[in-house]
Image (cartoon, rainbow, N blue to C red; front, top):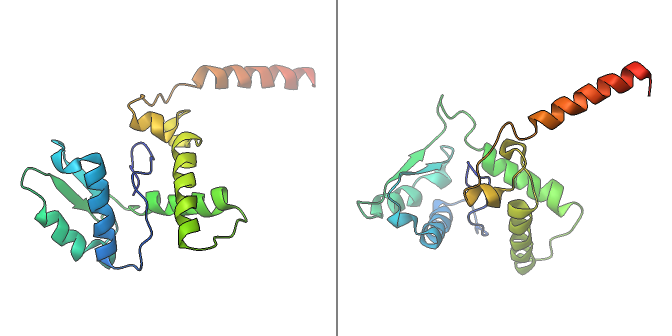
Length: 167
């Protein structure tokens, strides 16, 4: 489960299959860990309209206490690419983190997921975060879209001068 703003992995696990009972179990664990059932703000779960995000997930959302505000957003015209965050995590895990490593078994997979979460949250610098890690964004460090603006401008000017000189 990934936070769309900070890109931090909030929870990970191995689902036995694609049934909604496994997704609802992971969501319950994440809500318990972050105490989201006590959060005063609206929590929006962004998902596609797949069956794994219905059934038990809908039942679990309805079972939450009245003061818990949860909205489930499925793919719509406004949220055309709702699976992008999760799909990007799978892609990063497989192609950037695992490389050619072979996964031995379930225990090994859980170990690799722990390592991957640490890697993703503290060693990666997603473009959308402009030079900070997901953990730093999650902890409240502000994203500054202009952080590298001056350095980029100076590098462009230096390239221009070098090109004119022929070096």
